[in-house]
Length: 348
Image 1 (spheres, rainbow, N blue to C red):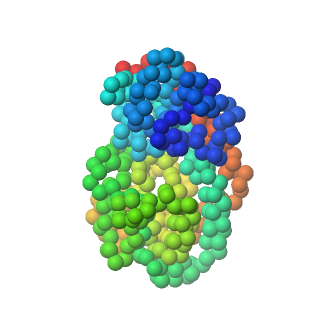
Image 2: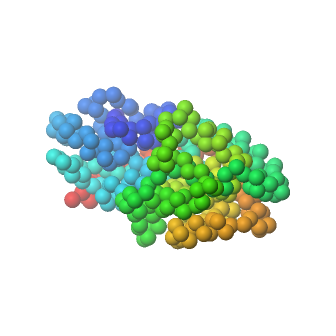
Image 3: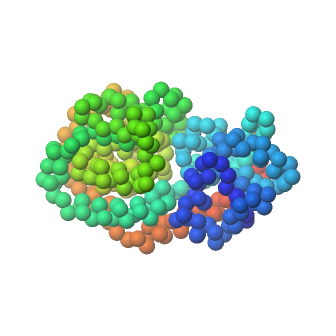
């Protein structure tokens, strides 16, 4: 199968990561010219809109080319993609209408990870850094951890974009326990005392975006290691399989993680739910009060140190990490091969 990736989000699809390319190239041929492709891939459905004229001309000449959105971001799926639960859909743009298919967290089992969430497998550096940090953290006594928290330079830390008043991000789908949290986490960050808080990211006044740094992840780890007490790890979206680097960063930097998740969320398979502050079902006002009143007792410290031990064990075997990547490649490849063969009976 010949594939061509198009659009400004082309770098945000599993096929684009350098760690995954050698695997996908064993089953798919990457072609530079869309005319030679069997499948046109997009990272985000909006990329269809942005390339509508080019696509219309292409499909007029080659109507059998399939359009597939290979999405890794539930945020994008739930905000701008219409019915994001449908595997086959129609995208009506300004001047055209396109049939397309979707592989995302809700239309497939591709993101049902075994031990490592998908996002971590996109870069080798995540494993290497976490292996180093957690092997050191597990050696720290409860007393040492408490001293670090008591002397932390910053009490409350938030590394996330300011999404103030952007209502489209506050989606709610209780039947599948999928919730948009971008505005919520912004509101929680704003509710914390200014003189005790660090807020970093686009929209908080920074002149440089984090993604423009040579290594934004290493920069974050270096800034926060043993320097912050409570570190927000709230995702932009609650979806049971969607776990980015955030909660791992909070633990790696020996901070108390701030999270928002339902009981079915798979983060509970990675660490004990008692090892982080869960803001589930709390308003931003009540959430901020819970955070301000939090005091780590002996039971919390025991859960926290156990989480550090569990994470140290998780990031001990690199072969398991590589195998997770291989298993994702197999699942995603199977989904793509299946979806292009399916008759789009759901398209309306």
